[in-house]
Amino acid sequence: MNDTGPQVVDRDESINWFRETRRRTAGLFGLLIPEAYYDQPIPLRHPVVFYEGHIPAFSVNTLLKRGLGRQGLDDDLELLFARGIDPEDRSSAADVAIASWPSRDTVRRYADRADEAILDALKYAPVEQDGHPVLHRGQAVFTLIEHEELHQETLAYMWHRLPRSRKQRPATAVAVTAGVLPESGQVAIPSGRATLGAMLDEIPFGWDNEFPRLSRDVPAFAIDTHNVTNRQFLEFVTAGGYTNPDLWSETDWAWRTAAGVEHPPFWSRSGEDWFWRGMFELIPLPLAWPVYVSHAEASAYARWKGLRLPTEAEFHRAAFGTPEGIERSYPWGEAQPDPTRGNFGFQHWEPVPVGFYPAGVSAWGVHDLVGNGWEWTSTVFEGFPGFSPMASYPEYSADFFDGQHYVIKGASPVTASGLVRRSLRNWFRPHYPYVYVAFRCVRASD
Picture 1 (cartoon, rainbow, N blue to C red):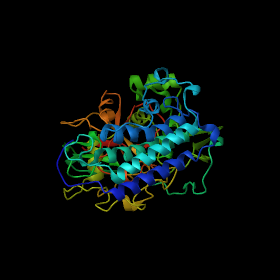
Picture 2: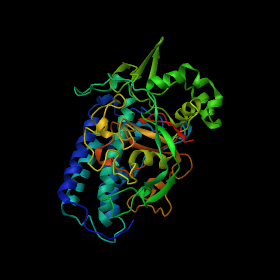
Picture 3: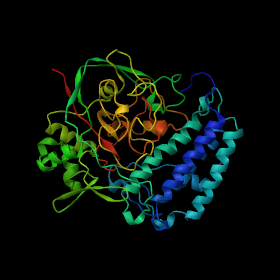
Picture 4: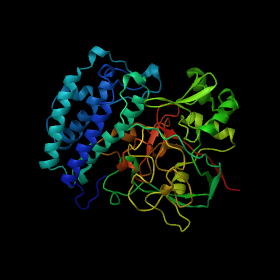
């Protein structure tokens, strides 16, 4: 991760970015009523209180202690809030009694002190030092802010699982349900090269799993023009897809039966009517929205259609490749992400109809490859050849190279715009049902 180059940290820009990120996080916590502070909406994650302490504690641990070699602000809290959990199931999740968590006043006082210390460091400390493993190219600065942006998405999908009575709906939360259901179809992508990852001198910052660059030959294939919609997935449900073990792998079927999964996690049913479990309301199932499902459910649907999920390299080829043979920085070209390109950056709390952002279409005519939901791939998460753990957060990726996580690409409605870069990789367990992940199918060309 050490590569010489020009200074990349602009102090003023970093301060503004940090402050804006903290404001957005405060807004997310502000959605909850005070009584929800110790709620645990997802059994496989810590309760709400943890995250309000974890984000500032991580910043202190990363920049002040690991980077600048300074003392922390509160060793006990910085240990308690050091790291979240990623258990395989509820039985392996650690339980911490409510009485063990500090009061909200204690957490907020700590967070205020941490913010002051981080801002002071961003203003005056030597936060970019050539050759320093944690501060080279300002790594710790980018790490702490992007870490918070990633956790904002965690907060959102956690909040999604809370009863609506535990949240306060903002006036801007308006669901876009009206849309034209497109004809289902696929786009043929000829064989070619796909570039995954990046080199250190190409981007100001990336997480360790984004490096080094990897080039792959991709055979010709065809890919869905749009994400699989709720309407299409409803056909799978109606056809008995959840009761046919032939469509599921052995482990996926065992999970489905043990957990009693009978429909997508964002759906609910009342009589014969289906609804979308929205962040702030129950919505009659919007048939033109992409369906959000686990990797297991997406794989079963693909088998039902006689298709499969794309590999990470195929996603890249469809998203960033062109008929001319060059590769783009974004599906639409080189222009920076903006609100016309896709459903990301907290424009909406929910999906929008597929194809809603034609300005974000790829060179091949494939829609919504960035925004409106991450996308499952069939690629097991691991490091690229030459992978090296990052000094500012060495366990970030390496702890998950266990063969039990799959790569997801793209972005969701609550992915920060700055995270919309070609090399970014995300990953989740195949049975984790809470994330905003859509999918599309592919087939090999004849």
